[in-house]
Amino acid sequence: MEVTPIGWILLPLGIACFLFAPNGLYPLMVFFVPFSATAVVNIGSGDSASGVQATIFFGALWMAREFPKFFRARNSPIGQNLRQPSTHLRWFLLVAILSLIMPIWINGHVYIDDPEFSNGFSNSEPLVFRLRNITQIIYLLYGILLAVLVAFRNSTLRQLLASVRIFLISAIFVSAWGFLQFFCSLLNVTYPAFIFNSSATGSAQGYLDQLEDLGITRVSSVATEPSTLAACLLVAFVLVLFSVTRDLTVISKRWDRFALVVIFGALMISTSTTAYLGLAAVLVIYLAFLKHTNFLRRKHIVALVALAAFIALTIALFSPARDIFISLVVSKGETYSGIARAYSVALAAQYFLQYPILGLGWGSVTSHDLVFKLLSNTGLLGFSAFSFFLVSLLRRLWRGSRMAGTGNPEWQWWSACLLGACLVLVFTNVTAGFDFVFEYLWFLLGLAMSVPLIHSLGRKQGPPDFLGQEAMAR
Image (cartoon, rainbow, N blue to C red):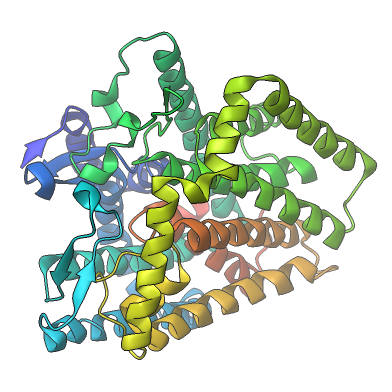
């Protein structure tokens, strides 16, 4: 085990907060949610090396403090209102655990192909029960517990807004760090990767990626790879976009608008297909919700048309932008990455058809999508359980966004805002892969679970403060 340079700072900070200032653990956990490439310690070496993410470190300490409160409140109005979504997630977790009998039962009689074509050809290995199956279940267990406890924590509008504020501040910093990486590449200056890109996990070295045919370094900032950065920043972008539209201050009016610009810029320079297609999805969802809430104005249409025209002119007149657009969007299906991703989905579909009930076991199959990732690893049972949770959550947010005259229009708008963020999350996970090992997914689901909870409790809060002192006093 090796402590990283930033780990020497974060480890004692976390321990000190746990012992003497536990209220600081939650803000630290939320702030480091986008930092998927930032490890406090690295375990193992070479291809087997893995890093403990900073957000997991702070999150585990916070959950150790928060879970006793949640357990004591299980029969309170908060606990009762969380019972339905937490039960749905618990059923999904139980199916995932049950699916682990499949690699034990199959015991090498099925071969799993490598969709990445390592060394120029496809490798196969027999399916047996491995340590990876256990670690993947641990990631899933951690994420589900995180989502439930985040929902429990954010049982007031005051604390919900405080959580969004911390996440948005983090997204601003992450975007700015992405610009630093971008300009380091342009100016041929050494990028200080040792600060935040400290994970030794092979998949966390995205800051080294390049578009070799174009000679452009891809921007991953503090995330494992550009697509992970894009998926997380898209969530922050939707949250601040909806807030600015309705003039709901998250940080301040000036900082909210700055966040909108800098996050959009980071998404554009990320050279991620997920970012570009995700922004198109955000545009469609945004216009739909403006029309749905009767908030669509001429200025919104003019602004979006002007933005689309600016992007189109940039692509048409600036050859590097045109080359990136063609490479990552138009010709993505013809690239090595695009072919490997499509092949992984096709393989997962075959495995599902062979074992449709429980799949091949959680953590057994790699598939760069959401649907066949669930079907191939947990079968129809796991897919149905997670779909039931997701559809139920989206339906509750949809009902909340339509409840005019509830006496709390801010709650109604946050329902619409988080519904839009969840739809973008679903889009990125369907098209790029199920990011269950990254905490931004479970953090957002926890926030989304809290909005119907807030309405059910019937609370009307005053102006929010930064740390949500009322919620912390529970």
